[in-house]
Image (cartoon, rainbow, N blue to C red; front, side, top):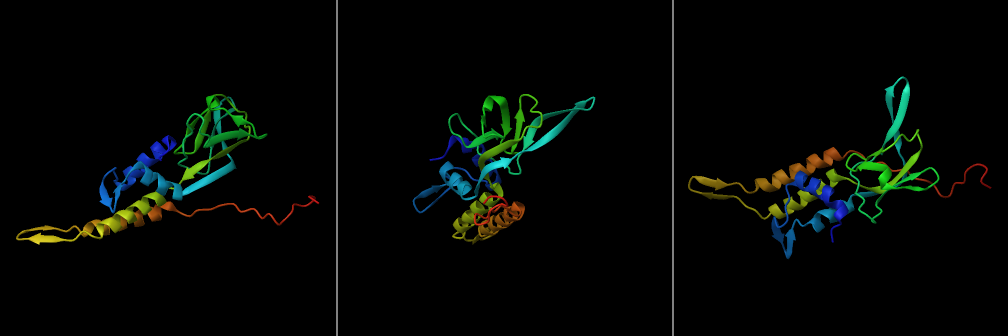
Length: 197
């Protein structure tokens, strides 16, 4: 069942892929329900754990700096919704910062605090999604559906329906190219730090 915290991301993917609920039927499945889109988004989910946020200096005059905004390296986060803790901000001692203290721009991965934080370190835990990879997958699935379409010609009229598959595959290629490289940080558990004996 689709999560209410995914509504904005699902709508963005629908716009990228020209999908609507009940667009077509394959077997016994009617595509594209919110569950279908969310399932593909979940395939391209990155669980961000305690990522150090980058503080953004804001010069307010007279050599004074304010720290209101903090930026993640990731984008397109799942929203938090009441008790659903899928986007959390913690301070340096691991205390959760309440949502009353900040507003989140989930698509941009940016947090804006209601007051100056004085450069305090903050850490983000959340779920980030690769919309381009999701869109590419959907276009490939649509191409598979369009593979059954064939061209029709009568007298002076024609329907070149085979173009649908070609265009869907071209869109998949476009979104694959927009995705860019993915990087992760690996930590070796078999190597101890100096002085840890």
